[in-house]
Length: 230
Image (cartoon, rainbow, N blue to C red; front, side, top):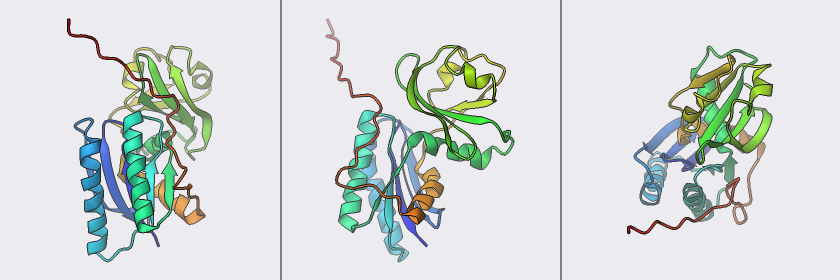
């Protein structure tokens, strides 16, 4: 029996959920853009109030750990650490790309048994953060920053059907033209989909050091200077 608070802020979507024994009992999300700094703390407060009002003690905090938006990840991890410290409960990290595979496995029953899953997070131009998993969520190819061309995934595509999804996949549809390439739209990382992965991590005691944990940025943050208006 476990109750886990889930926090996801790796993309434009800000979401929070509470699960009990891997079943989601509370969720909030906003897809309007970069409002994480404003929305996250109230969402977390509402989630904790919900658990408290139902006399359910929160046993752990799970946070989506990246890769993704540098600012979004920092906001999410900072909030998760604060809750973990404040409640004296352990912290669980959930890799963002693996998290994105959960709704595929839950809601797309027609996927072939030997197909591979390739979640993609948009980076810049034709670059994406991507990994390749099998249906058991074992990594076939580790997380990388890929500059996508028609050759990027050809070696795997020659042997397997691969499902591409996530906010980085849309720009790849016209580039990845292999007959084994499939695309699934409207998949974003959400807190409610963290529940099964977080529940397994909690059962195994797979916690991270709250003091020293950092998000997986994959690439260093690069500040840009705004162009002068004249």
